[in-house]
Image 1 (tube, rainbow, N blue to C red):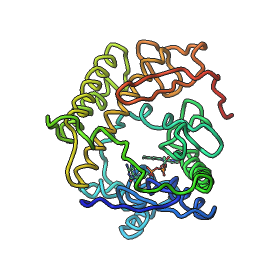
Image 2 (image 1 turned 180 degrees about the vertical axis):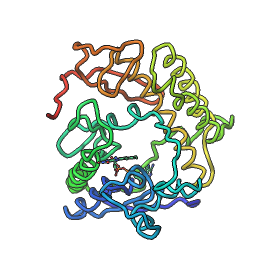
Image 3 (image 1 turned 120 degrees about the vertical axis):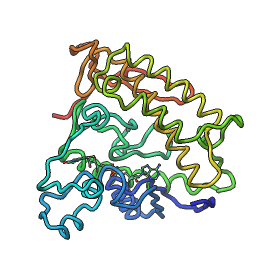
Length: 307
Ligand SMILES: Cc1cc2nc3c(=O)[nH]c(=O)nc-3n(C[C@H](O)[C@H](O)[C@H](O)COP(=O)(O)OP(=O)(O)OC[C@H]3O[C@@H](n4cnc5c(N)ncnc54)[C@H](O)[C@@H]3O)c2cc1C
């Protein structure tokens, strides 16, 4: 992973979970050349690996469980816990705020986004179109991954057919923070991740959300973003991946807290300790975006929620 790698394709699928795999299959069926890349290994990385999606029952024998979901049991094995017989502590880390809804906005039935040629699917895409403002465990998540992946793959193949392949010499990397630091003032990915986690992981900030705690946390994340823009980077491929991951957690945190502050009510999984009631006047999406200049806006159309 330390050498730059150049390849040309019609459809590049980023990720190897069910959404991505279904996208790849459907793009290929639609006649496109497809390359699928994953930062881990398909089936052992991302939400699908520990979730048990599609696994209804696992016999308690070591062989059966290892075959069914190796990653799920790995964390128990590391701690010397037999999950079938031992009692163990459960810590629901921010359950109810960080998963379920939200994600890249999709703007049509092909899961296209506002960026031409970019299609989003699965957990990366908003699931609000099928579940409104509230979801957690449940089959609609995996169903959304597979169905939105299929639509996105077909859509991307159609886009590629219409636009043709771009001359690689004409392509310019747009990624900046974590890849192209502005100064020689160095900050490591580990420092950025630790600083972002200090603002994003504590329950009193990100679960028991209150404007008085979210505002200072957001200010810290905004400062961190500027620091990362100045000095976060890497030389080898592995270092650059780490730097981009550190930039990504900071960017997402900034959009998330801006969206939280923009919704001055409690609705679905969006809970505000300082605004505990539902406000009928806020029956809309909160859109957010931007990197250096992050923004939020209320969507014009009221929410259409699946029944
Ligand atoms: C504990 C738990 C329990 C769950 N229970 C259920 C349930 O009972 N029913 C249900 O329907 N759903 C459940 N879910 C949700 C469901 O598992 C997910 O919605 C679904 O698996 C998401 O699939 P995906 O393909 O969108 O994403 P993922 O499975 O997360 O796949 C994303 C892939 O992208 C890769 N990736 C990420 N970033 C990059 C990058 N920058 N470059 C390259 N590759 C990258 C990752 O390595 C990963 O392979 C559960 C989730 C969890 C965590």
